[in-house]
Length: 323
Image (cartoon, rainbow, N blue to C red; front, top):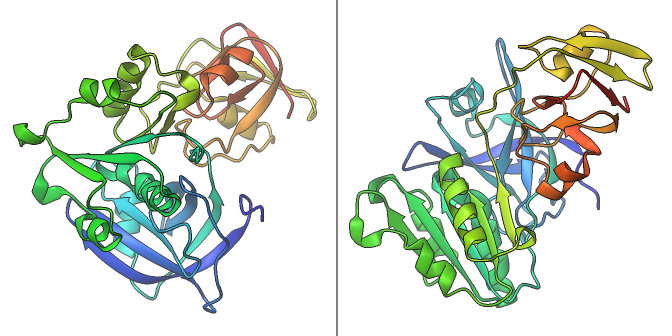
């Protein structure tokens, strides 16, 4: 079943406030019917709406992919939030409803791998929880390295125990030297053909990815998912042509392609505005791309056939899109 474009209204059946400012939300259908299945690594697009706040945000599913009675997500109350997480923490109460789209999976688990090394930093552990459950069900060789600032701020400990994952989850805390993650040792001991998965803060992800590459693990075996990213959308002005719409507009130095097109009546759906969710990907017919996103793979970027118009720009003076 293709669930990528389904839109549902789900009830918040249960809220658990975990350490570290994370709210774990259990979502069920309004009539109690089973929900569509999802695969490990999938996320939900959640419509966060309250007063002037009207945003879509992406949250990974942390529940068991084998369970169809509910979906479960973890929401970090981020002090640097642009309004999404703060609002969701405020309005997400048991009995309330949320509009969602999905599940979608841009971070799939390669179940055939001889070994899987999972690295979750803070809230980045959420997709890893679903992956760990699936890998355990398959009887696969894997380890989940869960990195947090301190033991007292570590969410999901009870869930790890309840899911029978204590023997495959290794905790690492910034304030406990004896638990420090020796990434080089873990990668050096990896089996041939092992796959690496990482999710968390950008610096943490960059560190894991760069070390995995240094150990000769190919990009096709290094998998990542960004929740958010610092992205600079500014640059020199250029012309963008929406070929099918027959419209040409100028994109200013502090403007995005999506916003410039919207002013001209060409609507492109944008959700994250940070180049992490892939909602706004457009096909490129002509022109060189200055990729600023974290969604497209390095191979896709080299091919130069598509771009995220919420943040990426043209390298030259003109770019033509199939819009």
